[in-house]
Structure formats: C-alpha cells, structure tokens
Image (cartoon, rainbow, N blue to C red; front, side, top):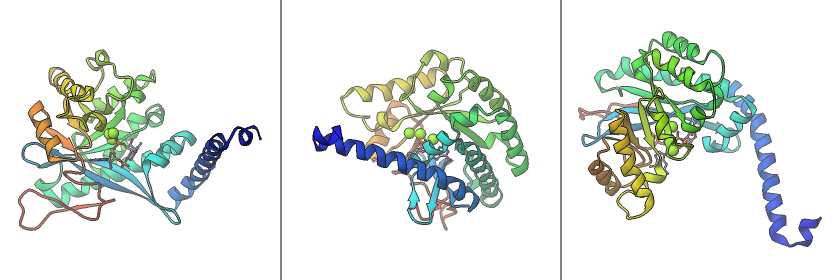
Length: 285
Ligand code: C2E
Ligand code: MG
Ligand code: MG
Ligand code: MG
C-alpha cells in the first residue's frame, strides 16, 4: 500500500472516497425499494411576497424516510437517483404528488391556498422524450390548471442539453411557468436569458447570504434584481434567514423571498385559526 507508506493523510482520503462510493452504491440499490414501498414524501416551503409576507407559492421538496437511516437529505440521494436513472420515475411521482396536493389545497383552502406549486425537475427528466406531454397528462389527471404550476430547472440542466430549451418551450406553451434555480452558480449566460423560455430567476442563497455586506457576492444580488426587472422576469431570493437580509433585499427591489425566516419545508399546510392570511405549518422536515 503506497498510500500507507506516505502517511495517514492519503490513507484517510482513500478510505473516505471508498466509503462514499459504497454508500452511493447502497443508496442507489435502496432507492428502488424506497419507491416501491412509498418511503418518499413531499415537503413544501413557502415563497412569500414582500412586504405583506403573504405565501404566494410553495416549493415542493422531496424527502426520504429511510427505515434504518431515518430522514435522508435530497442533497445526498437526488444525485444518486440522477446517476442511476431512477430520477425519471421518482420525478414523475414528485410531479404528480405535488400537483395533486396543490389541487387539494385549492379545493380545501380556497382563496387562502398558495397560487403556485414549484416543482424541481432534473436534467435527466428534461431530456426524457415526451416530458412536456407527461406534464400535460399530470395536469389533466389532477385537474390542476397549468397556471398553478412552476417547473424549476437549473441553468446547467438547460444550457448543457440541446433539447432542453425546446422541451421547456413546450412546457411553457401549456401555461406552466419556468424558474431557473440556483441562478448565478452554474454556467450563467445573461445573454441567453433574453431568449430562454424563463419566467422566474431564483437567486441562489450564496448571494443572498451576503446582501448588505461590502463584499463581492453582495454585488451579484444587486445586479440580478436589475437584470430580472429589465428582462421582465420575477426574481425570488433563496435562503433568506435573517430580518436584516430581508430588509436589504426589499430595499434592493426584491419582492419575493424564500427561506427559513419565513418557514421551513413542512409536509402540509393548514389554515391558522383567526388569521385572515393563512397557513400555519405543521412539523417541519
Ligand atoms: P433547491 O431546489 O435549491 O432547494 C432549496 C433548498 O434550500 C432546500 O433544501 C431547502 O430546504 C433549503 N433552504 C430553504 N431555505 C433555506 C434557508 O433559509 N437556509 C438554508 N440553509 N437552507 C434553506 P433541500 O430540501 O435539502 O433540497 C436540496 C436540493 O435537493 C434542492 O435544492 C434540489 O436541488 C434538490 N431537490 C430537493 N427536492 C427535489 C425534488 O423533488 N426533485 C429534484 N429533482 N431535486 C430536488
Ligand atoms: Mg429548487
Ligand atoms: Mg434553489
Ligand atoms: Mg439553491
């Protein structure tokens, strides 16, 4: 073992990599069972308007309740599902479940229901032939009017594929809105934004974290609200955690925010008694 001879550091590094690889392989195999045994569920996080604080939309975020590991983060298992292709089947379930839930809220909460549900869609799903048709079918089956759905994709998913733009155009033609997620962290091409079929820019938390500070990242959040306004896109600031950030974002021109300050993802939302405006969130996950 060369690594052993050169010292503990290299050895530890190899071991960590091995452990990660076998962990991935294990998770990958378990994802199949998880789908068959309904171990996934959806959580919803509010997207609120400023200054009212009204919940105008929710983002649907998948959760995995593993029988032994407990809650597994999507940051850990979504990349694995993307890698082994199971994201296509899981993603189809996510879309159907989220649209059905949104239709249910509209029926039960009426005017208090959020206006839209925003569903994350992976590059792998976008490049699947017939994706737009499958969205249309889910909307028809669940009875959800298309204007109540947003499809969230990352810049990387859009700009890395030849067909993604056409697919998004077809989805948008249904009346569904398109959001670019984690904007600013991928291969951002401001030029393409002019022609891309996009309605919403979700400005990544890494920029939001620095608003109100003198550093370089703060400049990006400032620039992106101007770009959004000029291109008539709706900007949503992600990962807002403090009131000071919210105030600064509002001052910069942001009118839509999402983050722990307003609510963590939760499996359901209910009307809170005595409040006109809506929704107390049940247990967060
Ligand atoms: P994302 O789409 O950018 O989702 C936002 C993530 O930020 C969520 O993490 C959310 O819980 C977290 N977040 C929201 N507000 C705050 C905050 O104020 N502070 C901090 N620290 N975090 C905040 P989550 O649910 O763990 O999801 C992580 C990522 O996994 C998502 O990032 C998305 O890329 C992926 N993902 C989650 N659900 C789905 C899904 O249903 N389908 C697909 N394809 N990917 C998903
Ligand atoms: Mg998202
Ligand atoms: Mg995001
Ligand atoms: Mg993000």
